[in-house]
Length: 318
Image (cartoon, rainbow, N blue to C red; front, top):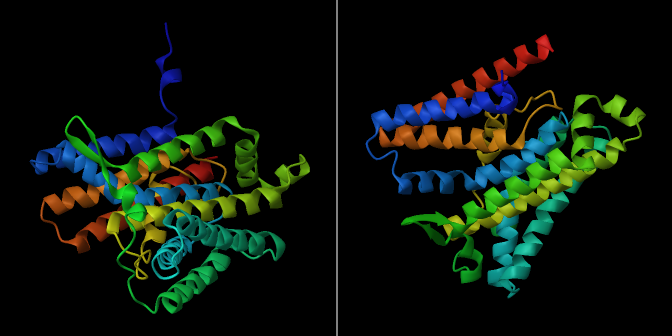
């Protein structure tokens, strides 16, 4: 008799997927227009920024770290690229590269502090979160950057599929998920990342340069934050120094709901995308039902606690 269980997704992904489907079914009953193609397009646009932040957050959490600075670093990147383009006359494409370079530099600094000075990732990124916030406010004068070149908002333009519009930024987000998932699943650096998260000392004894892996992961996460800044600018049409103040927690929420263990070494990137969609679906569905945003935050908090509790129980059994 054929064993169909071999063809099912791993439980770490299957659980969040079932939760997403259950949430969609619930809101399809409660809100008449929830199942429309345009509403699903809206959900994807609402989660594309946090979804990309969550890619970098996933890489870091897989190494048993955490990054509290991602939202503020993203905001800094958005201000850098928009100020360079509007006030310094730098071509938009180069300005965006400079912005991504700034966020990558912050990620590199995080990695160096974690590996060279041996500081806990929580403390390091708590500090750099405040530093990034301060630099953003000082550099921008706490003022929104407007009148952006059209090139900087192209990723917010729609592409039509059968009458339903999807932002180009959503397609970029999905493409980066696919590429990163492949790299984690099918390359030696991806396996090294999981090994470091499972047991750093054991990975070192097998010949893996654990410090180099961690530095690369934090720098790469910074690059993803810069790309998320591009999507944020494209979606809003401005460089907002107040952006990113809740996105760090939202990205961690997406990673945890997606089944990645906070203890490191266990998780699948596709689960993170599902986790981001779960948050997006709940917020969108509750909004359509007329539920106050305060209760949306309450529901999100409950979901996070349940996901972390499940992770804790799973870790103890392992």
